[in-house]
Length: 131
Image (cartoon, rainbow, N blue to C red; front, side, top):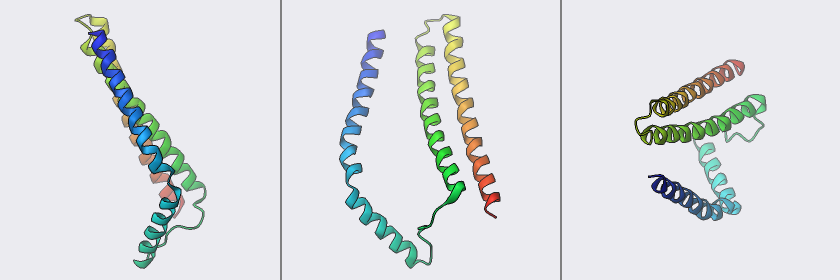
């Protein structure tokens, strides 16, 4: 059973590595990204909007930081849910391992809820600060 879990983890790591290898050239094409940004900005200004060329200020920096931290916390929570689920499944009826797996899942879900509330609070405060 442990060997099967090792194979699954290795396959997931390999697939993530392959996705990273194939995504790198697309992310490295800065010339194409600049053209796409110009096209998007042209469309936004054609509809009467502002492309946001000015500096965003402190609110934008705080929102970006909170968004990045939320993504990191979300990824960590998903990993902990998977880890807790594997621990729960492989407990073999041992009550301490079952409780450990359940607690990992519960705490990861509580972490996701806290991250969601943090997003809400930051957006609320940011909207009130810019008024």
